[in-house]
Amino acid sequence: MSRAKVTKYVSGCLVSLFLMTQGIQGSDRPEFPLGEKTQGIRSADISKFPPIGLLPPVAIPADNPQTLAKIELGKKLYFDPRLSGNNWISCATCHNPTLGFADGLPRMLGGPASREGGRNSPTIINCAYNEFQFWDGRAATLEEQALGPIQNPNEMFETLDNVVRKLSGIPGYVAAFKEVFGTGVTADGIAKAIAAFERTIVFANSPFDRYMQGDVNAMSESAKRGMDLFNGKAECIKCHNGPNFADNKFHNIGVPADGPLKEDLGRYNVTKNDADKGAFKTPTLRNITETGPYMHNGFFPTLFEVVQFYNGGGGRSENKSADIHALRLTGQEVNDLIEFMKALTGELVQIKYDSVPVAYPSLPTDF
Ligand code: HEC
Ligand code: HEC
Image (cartoon, rainbow, N blue to C red; front, top):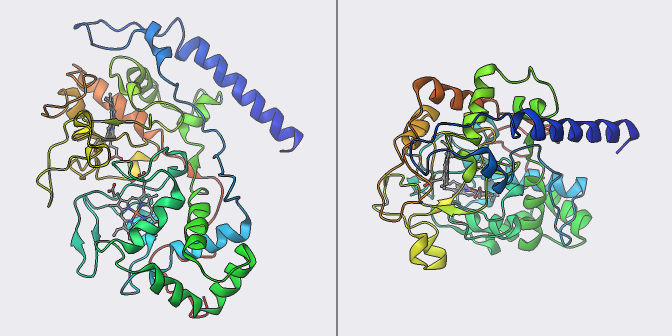
């Protein structure tokens, strides 16, 4: 970092620290009337939850350092439909940059017959900050995750052997793998390059981020009230906490079943622990305006319906989290909360897309 940048960064941190200790999370934060014992978070309790705030730099695993050539290779693989069984589906089909790196559908369509799956395609925006991947957290790292969809019969239905064989016949890939890994095309290299590319899909500089850096006009008055509700009366921060608005934990909030699955046991499928039945990973709320429909099965088309769901105390489930209960938000408060979530939509800060067509590209045959 240059000296000027360091100064800017440090002063940004100081301003946000000031805001955190003073106006926003400190002593003059309003106390909400507590109708029930569990209603609202008192200002004294707010410090129990990691504060929402500016994103730290992405952590890069020691065995997969970022290089420009690797990121470029990962980007090509991410957009290349030749990773699928019919050379038609790429990662970008379901995690499409023009649809918030998701697909705009309640549940994914995949496999040779484009069948509807049981779950919603989550955005890969800021997935580098996830401690678990997938709604049920069954993969830990992006490297581990990347080879899953290629082989999944309901997604890209291809074998790794076939992908390696296909890509080994494309001179551009052979040269790129040689340059990046010093090897021919390998499944391990495919996973590493795609993961390196995904670690650049970081969205920040939202109105919320600018507000936290001291630009008090970056958020509307309604959004500012929404932020107070988020941290207080509406209790969202209990789970959507930390800089990426996700606690990396699993909760059952009672989302009704929908789509081809009669029942989705979520995290329980991984742990076989009864307490995890119907629990899903808390998703990030960054860029949430772009990534609907919402929830693991895309049950809610809009943020309004999501907030009304929470306001009414969530859904029905024997195993529902104790942190989900009726909120008694007024119509104005519901709107304020939505305005705050709108202020979380930022921009891609690291890479541009000039060199790759945005969706469903046909890459040249030598690549
Ligand atoms: C046919 C649609 C489809 C395709 C193609 C697809 N995905 Fe996904 N992706 C999904 C769905 C659905 C999930 C959630 C599945 C679950 O939780 O069980 C998911 C989950 C993920 C996640 C986890 C995100 C999170 O927050 O948990 C990442 C990362 C990801 N996909 C990356 C990729 C990459 C890389 C490719 C290409 C190699 C790819 N996906 C291809 C539909 C797709
Ligand atoms: C007990 C923890 C918890 C609390 C409290 C909570 N959430 Fe969530 N949130 C989750 C989980 C878990 C999911 C995913 C649930 C699922 O798909 O079944 C979720 C999903 C969402 C989604 C959909 C995200 C997506 O990408 O599909 C939005 C929006 C959301 N929550 C907003 C809020 C707001 C606003 C509040 C406060 C009113 C709140 N949440 C309170 C845990 C929580």
